[in-house]
Image (cartoon, rainbow, N blue to C red; front, side, top):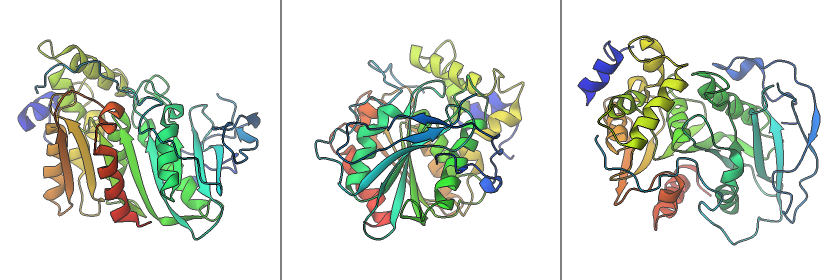
Length: 342
């Protein structure tokens, strides 16, 4: 498969209220413009604690077929019946001038500064929304963490690397305002679902590690768009063919042969470095994003001394349905606790 990836590429593998929350030190992120302000509804108006008013800018393989794949996490992912802790505040903030550059921040007003969990939704890079991740966000808030549930520009809004840039910008914004959110800027993890798992891993492998990033979790992450391109040929399943088209759209409508540098940038295994954080990935054995993609990343990270764990479950479940399988959410949570503490 490594040969297929290189063939597809055509070359070798070298290669809050807007306070404003986006700022010039976003590193790798293009500074946003000067946004206008308008009131925005609370991300969780039914919460027992006050959510108040917020502001945001005016915007501008070879795998078997997956049974009813759900690339975008559903609202019922990781259901939690326990109430949101009473000391938790939830607000929606803009971290850029685009309508999609917003994030819901859940933070504890009492006690010591908390580590943070950034939640990144999936949806073929072209859809999905943070609103589907509320239950998962609540579950990590109940564990005592600050939670940042973020949206990002989709492939129809902007081509790669805009999506990675948005995650970097959101992370940097929260770290800059860590005191406001009672958050420890030196301890956070990224948890991504499907396409969001690709973004989480891409941020984890960006440069030689990110300040404060203690771990990356991907649930069905397509960390190798080049593999997805190869698997989505006429011989691939319907879902694999759809993923191939989604990857091309992410690359601005350009194929690997025509835009090798863009595809190389999207290919997470190409960017493994010694400073990268440890990673965890879950796949189903027969889903349309096969486990071998994460195994490729695991091998690349191992070559530079970084540990990655890849777990494979039976069946075809993808993304949030996989997260709801018995033991998966608990394993992820335990892995995060081991890296962030309580």
